[in-house]
Image 1 (cartoon, helix red, strand yellow):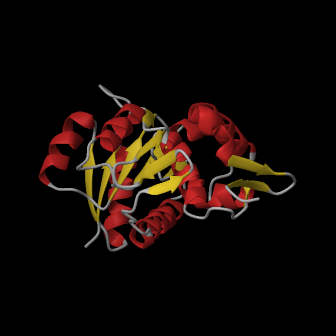
Image 2 (spheres, one colour):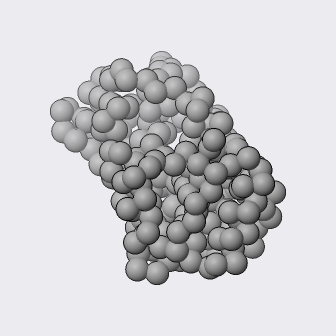
Length: 226
């Protein structure tokens, strides 16, 4: 049975979500803070984590960062639950590796729908282990590393995924909406300027290899091509 952890310090919300999970065929386990979550992760890895941002001791974004930096937990799908609804907070959470977000107050039915959607994306995602190359850029999906001229380049998760999907399809033009859907998810409503912002910072970080990402005017972006 699918195991879902929820980290939420408000008892009423945590109990409501746990009840909804259990009546919908999931196994749920709740935690008030990271102090309870991290020991549990050492015992059993869940199929998905629901993670509130405003937590005592260690905020949710810091918890997410720690999860993504640990090789044992980095692949766990995470949905952020937050009272902060502006675009900056959503983008920051997604850049740190969140798979989706739900803004309080939320519908339990919507939350369950998002859980199922994230789990579907997680189980159907192909785990390619082949290192990708384009000119002087190398991208290793397993080690989650990018190098330019053999020098490591530090990218956020969304920058990495944007570069990966284009390097996997050299010469193919990706519209902004297609990249938004593929990298940020169908439900993300931050707008296509989010893509432009990430392409801009990605090019800057790639340095001498920045021209590998080409703009196709009026359409979108690609790696390689004429």
